[in-house]
Structure formats: structure tokens, C-alpha cells
Image 1 (spheres, rainbow, N blue to C red):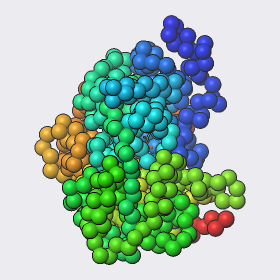
Image 2: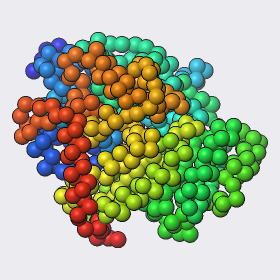
Image 3: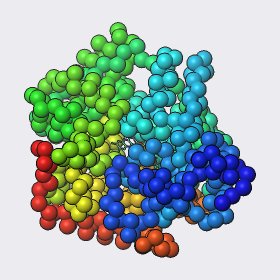
Image 4: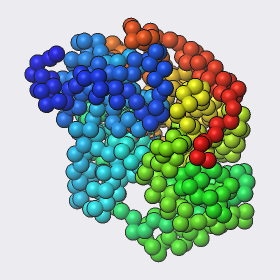
Length: 511
Ligand SMILES: Cc1cc2nc3c(=O)[nH]c(=O)nc-3n(C[C@H](O)[C@H](O)[C@H](O)COP(=O)(O)OP(=O)(O)OC[C@H]3O[C@@H](n4cnc5c(N)ncnc54)[C@H](O)[C@@H]3O)c2cc1C
């Protein structure tokens, strides 16, 4: 197919055209019913596994000349369809760019975009340091994938989003040009979902590893009481690593806990720092939690902390009589609207006859990153397909309450137009999406316009991860891609949601 670098890659088996290896790259944790291949061409023409920025540049240039769509892909752990092709093309998988080097004196980690965040953290901790934030429930999640999908996670409350930790980063733009920059470039990539370029390498600032981390846990009988306590806790001057909120069935799903805490709302405040200070902070958190808080289980909170670094679907995704999996969607929700959001999710789940759950962590003092999920037996293809309407309705609810989906991917292509808020400058909007407490204030026209303008300026051919975020592409029966308006995606998802309400209650065979 090509000469020079690309021929070398092909000879080494790092540029594949074989169907078998390519087809696995057309999937993410939400196994798409194959019937959707009638609409989307999720099997790439090429699977490339470059070892560095030079090879990425060559690949991107080659794809541009061939007018092939390019899909950057890390661990493929994001379930919004961001890392799967919609009209074939070339998947650039970053797993061969996974080196991690720690500079103990300089307190930095320099890593390839394909380095799993968990590996980076392990290497940092071995040197008495730590990287923050960390993604939740996705142990294989890569540095590049985490940054490109927003970089908000456990530790953002204290340290900010991942982009703020970037001292230097390298990316390859849609024309194949390399770009090196600081946290400004990182915030451009942050949340861009592989639409603006391929991140190849970054240097992250690290922090001293805390002497101790201590969970302070509470349970509440009513959601509203938990929500009020959350607001009070976030008004204290304390800086916990994160504060988490677990819905009544979350510990059942996550930890398979059927004990005394079943049905309660859980709040865990993860404090970190020197031992002497933690006792004082613990007392202050308890005061802020208020009289309606009952003590929770530290043991469960520690198990939850451990689980944050493990795949969310492990307990349920058994092969056997009941093959079921978690469909997860992340939303940013204003802290003071969390009771309405969580209550709304429960009502939605009941109406759509699904088993649902949610968990959330605060990523700044006014915003909760909520993972809402439904659990479904993926062997029931029709039911699985219709259940995709649930995350759509959950995103609508987040938008109604002043929040938004954390990312758009393929399944959220109809959502961008609905953003709201009060900011004037489109570039400030784009930055606000990545940085700090203004995350939620994004003006409707500004955000859409800013995203499209940026995309047009950097990728005039529109071949970097097309068919996602701002536009929906279909390739019916693998034919030429057709662009559909966002409205079409919304209609499709609405129809699924309505259809799902007519289905019987989801039941698991090993329940
Ligand atoms: C249960 C669950 C919990 C999650 N929790 C969080 C969370 O707390 N915070 C959070 O931010 N996300 C979260 N996510 C979303 C996602 O899993 C993470 O963002 C994860 O870090 C993605 O990493 P990945 O390597 O698997 O990326 P992938 O799934 O491979 O890709 C994700 C997106 O990034 C793009 N991309 C990948 N690599 C690059 C690159 N090198 N350059 C440019 N673009 C690239 C892809 O095209 C795609 O659009 C969660 C997802 C699930 C299912």
C-alpha cells in the first residue's frame, strides 16, 4: 500500500489490513448489536499501531491523501462510541506508544499517549509521587484517551482537570503536522474526542504521594438529605481528593454488597494528607454532613476506592447463564441539582423497565461527574438496542437541569446543539469546557460555533474522527458515507427510548 515508514510498519505487522484484527477495533465496552453495521461501517480498512510521533505523522498524511477517516484509539474503554469508526478508514491505536518515565526530582511523568493511566500511577507511586486526576472504573484507560475524553476524574476536585497537569505535550494535527505545546495545547485536545488531532506524548506534573488517605463515610435514608450534605461539605475549605455519591443500588452492582447498607444513599469523602491533619479534617467533615447522616462503612468505601481502578462491569459481566453488561454514560451535573437528577434517573429507569444505578464524584466544588448506567443482557439484541434510548434520556435530563453529557462520541451527536449557559467568547467557552469551575457555563451558539470553527480550521477535509460530536455519518451497507442532521440522531434515540417502554421488565436468568 505504501512506501518507506508505512511499508516498514506493514512488514512488522503494525499496519494491518486483515479483517479479523480490524473487526475487533470496531467495538467498545458497549457491544454494538451487529445489526447496526447496516447503518455504520465500524470495521476499519486499516489498523495501525505506530511507535512514535513520526509514524503517526506519516499515517495521518497517508490517510489524508487517500481521504480515509482517521480514528485515534487508546484502550477503547469509552462507551460513547468515540473510538469506533462510523465509515471505515484507519484506526490509529496507541498501545505501542506506552512508555512511562518518572523524573523524581522534577516531579513529572513523561509518557506515550497509549500509556495506561493505572501504569503511570503505579510508576509515580513507586517514587513517592502521585498523578491526579485518575479515570474511574477503567484500568486500561490511556493517557491520550483520558485527556481526549475530558480528563476529569478522581482527584479533579483537589488538583483540577488533567489538562492543567500537563507541562508539555505533543500531538499530530489532521494534516500530519506535529505540534508541541503546554497546557494550552492540552486543553485544546482535552474533550476534543479525537476530532482535532492525535496526542502522541505528554509530560504531567506529579504531586507528593499523600501520607495517608482516609475515607469518611455516611449513609442517608433520603436522597435530598444526602444532596444537602454534599453541598455543605463542598462549602468547607477542605480539599478532599474526591467526594463520592452512590445511589441505593450502586453498592449492590459495584461491590455485590447485599448487607445492611442496601437501599441507602452513600456519601464518601476521601481525605488525604498528613496523619495529624486528617483527624481535624474528619471532624469538620462530620459536622458539615449534619445530623441526618448515619455512619457509613469505611470498609465499603475502601473497596469502592479499589473498585475505581477496576472495570465497572466485572461483577456482572459473567459468562454463564446471565451474560449482562453495564452501559455507562457520564454527565456533569450542578451539585445543587443532584437530587433532581438522581431522582429523575430512577424514574426513567422504572419507566423504561430497566435495572439502573448511578454513582458520582465531584470534579469541582459545584459540579458532580455522574456515571449513570443500566445493566442489560446483551444476548437480547432488540432489547439491548432499544435500551440505548436510556442514556439519551439521561442526557436530556442533565441538560434540563443545567448540566451536560461529559462527552458526545457517536451516541451524543444530537446533543451539542442543546448546550446552554452564559458565556460570550466562543474560545473561552471551549476552554471553559475543559477547565475549572465554569465547566457548565457554555453558551449554546458559542459552544457549537466554537467547536465547528475549530474543527474547520484544523481539519478542513474533516477526516479526523468524523461522524462524531458535531455530525452524524452513516455508511448504509458500507456504501458512501452520508451526513445526517443531529435531529436524525435525536429522533432515532427517542424512538428507541419510547420502544423500550413497551418492552417487558428486563430480567436476568441468574437473578
Ligand atoms: C464506567 C466508566 C467510567 C468512566 N469514568 C470516566 C471519568 O471519570 N472521567 C473521564 O474523563 N472519563 C471517564 N470515562 C470515559 C472513558 O472511559 C475515559 O475517559 C477513558 O479515559 C478513555 O480512555 P481510553 O484509552 O479507553 O480511550 P478510548 O475509548 O480509546 O477513546 C476515547 C476518545 O478519545 C479519543 N482518543 C483516544 N486516544 C487518543 C489520542 N491519543 N489522541 C486523540 N484522541 C484520542 C478517541 O478517538 C475517543 O473519541 C468512563 C467510562 C466508563 C465506561
